[in-house]
Figure 1 (cartoon, rainbow, N blue to C red):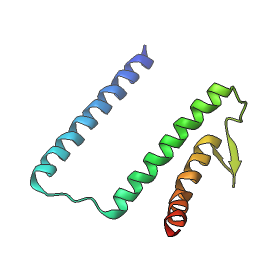
Figure 2: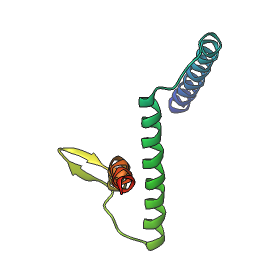
Figure 3: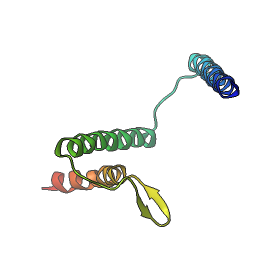
Figure 4: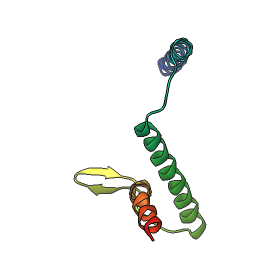
Length: 103
């Protein structure tokens, strides 16, 4: 019984927090004119590229029924190998584009 009430309180708190944040963003967006910085655009592009590569890896692993470890340890920190590989590819992707555009 206490588990359900705690879950309901957490859910209500989360919904209230989202409502307050959305209301704050709504009022701040009306008062200021925002402009995306080059850093925020680059970060958005990096996350989008890494996410696309990650989803492609997941579909490829599922289609080929490959056995990969759930987690790998790197400097005493556990990582998802597919996510780490996708992030690495997304990080080095601009270097390949820069190399190809020079020719």
